[in-house]
Amino acid sequence: MAIRKRVNGNGVEARLEALKADLDTLQQDMRGLLADVKGIAADGVAEAMHTASDAASEAADQAQEWATDNVDSLRTVVRKQPIAACALSMSAGALLGALLLRR
Image (tube, rainbow, N blue to C red; front, side, top):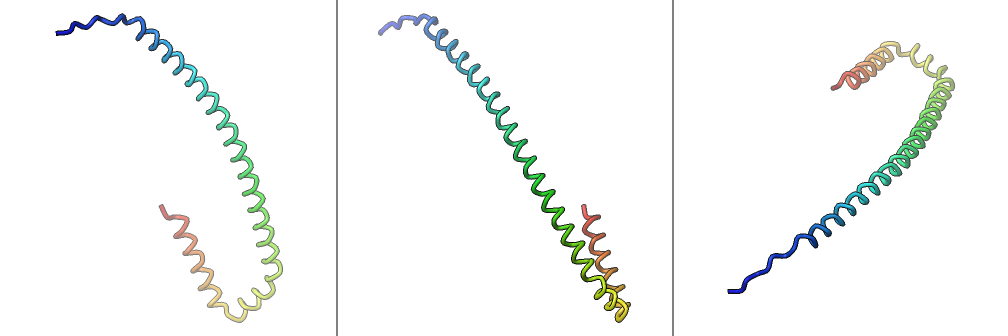
């Protein structure tokens, strides 16, 4: 039977220390990368919020312009068909209420 010699743990310990050092360096690099990604994401979110705000403002302006242009025709329709106008407005209110109170 062959007898094995015990291997001195110094080589393993040196490798283990090198591995720990590499892991520490990797951890520091990941922290730096995370900080960079965080900054880029914040910039992207700010730009998206600005774009969404501009789009909402534009949509509100268009809705206001349409309402101003069509208020006279709406008045004549409501005067000609008041019951239908009331039923339509109550239906729209019920629909909005159901959507907003939905959980």
